[in-house]
Length: 202
Ligand SMILES: N[C@@H](CCC(=O)N[C@@H](CS)C(=O)NCC(=O)O)C(=O)O
Image (cartoon, rainbow, N blue to C red):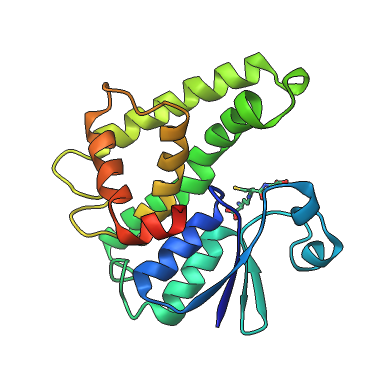
């Protein structure tokens, strides 16, 4: 059975959502996003960086939400939630799948840290301003990619939407999905209406 170390509103949302979309049985190991849970000796033995998600797949311990997702898709996906490997559609899918963590999350993470998570004395306004500027630019890119499509790579929902949907969950919490981004807002509404998203975020 897939065991997911999951803390609310963290990147482990992606794994719970993916498991729901694939209909995989799973068990949640509930974590709090605090040092007591993330930096316990027991948890650091599984994830030396003290981050979520971690999964235990019948004794196989994995971290990194993108790597876990790709492994679960290869093992259990039977071709679902991704275009056929090696096609041009697959190249575009991989771009957005990885852009979510490598391209967009650094800005979202810096906003989270410097506007909400760090004690006020440790927040750096310049870092926050630069992250907001970059995040806004990236949302503009997403906005331009969406016209004529229900999902980021076309009219089929894929795992790239799960990876990116988590970024948008935080961007929405941070008030970044304004009326100047109608396509992105509609896309996020479409994603957040999915039962798997709801299960992963409640
Ligand atoms: N690239 C990793 C990032 C994991 C990560 O940074 N998770 C955050 C929660 S969203 C965390 O646990 N942060 C605690 C820390 O870094 O100390 C992934 O995609 O799984």
